[in-house]
Image 1 (cartoon, rainbow, N blue to C red):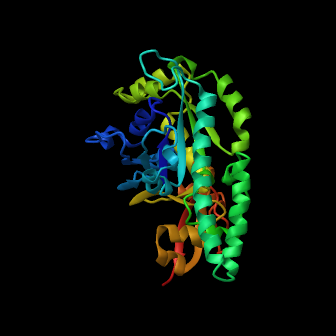
Image 2: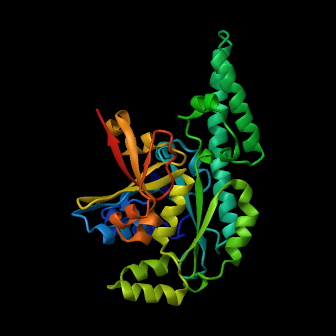
Length: 357
């Protein structure tokens, strides 16, 4: 799962990137025109609770790959050099500046969150339109050489995409059939990818959601998810030595959930993924699987042999296990289940796969 951090210059992108993957990922990154990459652990309170319960020899969190992309300015997303990096991203986190600080330069003179969202959306739309026009030109040239049913289908689909984009409608809002999906799956459409808008507010504005609510109402038609963060404050909190100090500082500022937790959770949701866990004295591990996946697919996330030789899954529900206090006590309540190939995995499930290869 690869998340791309995007936005205008001086919005807090680099600080958020450091929060997600650690400051070491920026070591040696001197050229802001080049992307920076890092990998961070997904912070999930359920994982922490399972580690407390099992005290395993090994604990393995799910991981999130994060790419800090160069700042977006006019026409940067329609230029060829940006295309490769952008097309490799699974979801975008657009950092929107919603704090006013005269000491920090803004390319428009002053922050304007609504305009920032409109601008980045417009640049993404332009990128996709440019790609479609070039692709349609190529298709038309090929069709002049002779009949091609697949090319005709692609032309019809891309024309539909172009019409939506000309209405400023992102492609993520369109329903695409399985057959059509196969045609365009490899194309670098930016507006088809999930988009999370991270509203970066001043330290004293964390608890005030008026602006966030207004922006959600104004841009709901774009199909984006919106979170509110005080990135600078969270960076300072992260430097405190003890968990007690961090919790007290967060409470003073009205921060109910750390930025890393909130943002990674939204990214997972936006990508259509969910978590499940495997547990034991040797290891507690968190895994991702597609929402709606059946048990064999979850087994395949662990190892292809488990999916190929799947027999059944032993299932515990997270809340049931925590309430019981141990596996033995849970089994005594009759809430330890055996599930077959048709079981749809749910977020937070704890699975043990029985298989035979």
